[in-house]
Length: 169
Length: 345
Figure 1 (cartoon, rainbow over the protein chains, first blue to last red):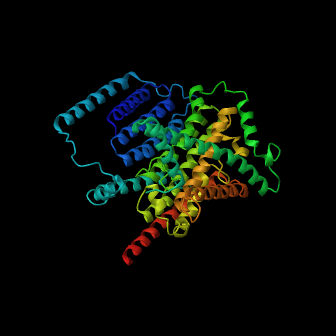
Figure 2 (cartoon, rainbow over the protein chains, first blue to last red):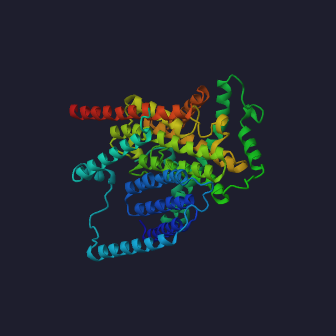
Figure 3 (cartoon, one colour):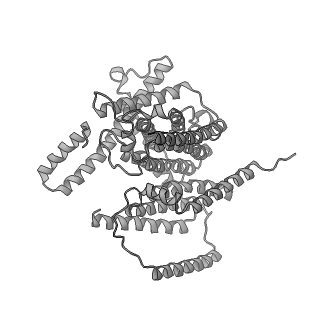
């Protein structure tokens, strides 16, 4: 891709992602926060697409941005307020917690950045990302793949059992 | 090399612009803009034809005439309706969330139009032939449910809100059988690329190899496009008009536009996945494509005006307990079939 277009698109997606993330935290209304989260996910999907990770970008949109719908439904059903206006207000105590978590994350990221040497791959871009992913998932990472599948299945069965409720007689 | 009518026209146009300007980069840029304009033109014209066709088909099925006063055979009825909608007063509910409520109809059109980027209209006439083509369509199409929910939520109206919640339940239960029915097609083709899926049907159409997937796909597509017998999101007799209750005039027209764009999407997807896309004898590819797409649109209208509306619990039960197991069975059967085929040849 043309370098100039790449840079412009990168900064566009990055600015949208950061602004949306800021909106997620500072919106007073839970639904608005969740919508900004969807925007943030879509901007991150744009970053993936710029890196030629097309399948990952589509999964990001389908799974993450798609889940925001469920998040909003849960948010509305769980908060049980007449108005959603002040459903996501920052508390004094949560600011402290947020500061600690952010600091920890910053330290972790710095450690990773300082210890990992990023290499520019000399090989050309992978054209068939889906095929390559499938090969890896069903050979090298098959154990992790199956464990995740079993975990999801058990979570689903658990949800069904909980939703059915006890047999009251 | 591609030999379709559309590609030849585009090549001629691009050569003409190139000789006029003499800069390849600017020519490419102009061509991309022209292609986007062409896609929007296709959508708008198709929507106008579909609205007229819906009324005539409805009239025919209910044994009446349908629109027949404005212009010859009433073909200008849609134009008259558009003028009426544009001249309507713009009513905004006092207690609605203004910003969210206002942007919802516009946002709804984005996923509806975005999927047209990967549809093969003719041999080589495809805006971007993504490697993940059909998966991209699924990912983008699933986003429209968010707009229904926001529209229902921002209207601050119980009927709109129930409609929005119904949209979430309905889309979730329709998308999973649909994705699994498409997966069987992808298994036979071995690719997610739209052009490869069409090319794989040069011999036999997938409707003959995958009849079960075809039926599941048609039913789940009817749910996805919110059309009777599964138009529970609007359900006039139950919740007025669901998320569209508070919208009028041009804002409502945008919902309407997105709805008919989705119907066209459903027909194009069925044509591409099961009916061999643009392929056919004698006639050029684009003509075959248009014939098949309008045949499928007619089938969807036929379904709409034939069946009564189901209840929400019937629809959810049908989708999760019948369509999903059938789709899973179809995937296993397809897997065994592909294995035996590879073993024999």
